[in-house]
Image (tube, rainbow, N blue to C red; front, side, top):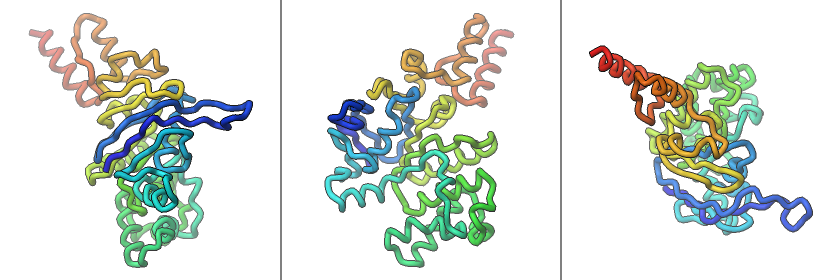
Length: 284
């Protein structure tokens, strides 16, 4: 299931003295099963862009096509597109409201008009996909859970609607390092199940480590796209991005003249192996 953006433009308060162009002439294609990132400086248009992907915002011009469906062309197609594209916004746990975890996760599937047996199945699978024990927490109040657990329950509520494409907007914002690690492991697991993942993040380390490709937004336009290796080798600084920490370390080590670490080393494990090999070579 692919998702295509064709010449997207979005203008806030069009034809008023406060008119502001948020997105201009943005086009891209994301293939089924890809893990891509949308990155850029604050105010570059990322949030506006992702809201157009499932029709929360209607483009001023251009269109979004999901699995052959033009998003928002009719009410029926808008509903169908939203069933295919789920969005997890920042701090989704603030939207928890039901008296039990199971009821909260079931809210979306219930509104989809599914049978009770199917709803229960989806709720159980979604909670377990987020690494939580269904039998242990299903009857608990979501407000009794830890911050990281609340976040994962809120995401389970999106997963229970069974979208094929899931957009995560800064999914680990406010979590401690362990909570970040646990959540990203679960998000990576979704990809192994065939889901298409779109990640909006300010963490270049996460983008470099996890994503197949990245789209760089700059002042409302798509300024660059490519693999993390390509993105962090070129003009990323000019586009308001910081390099991943391991890229900074690689540059520092290469600057000593004692190492020759290649571009695209984004995991600590790979960096350790490369440094060991370089040290062994130098020792010889």
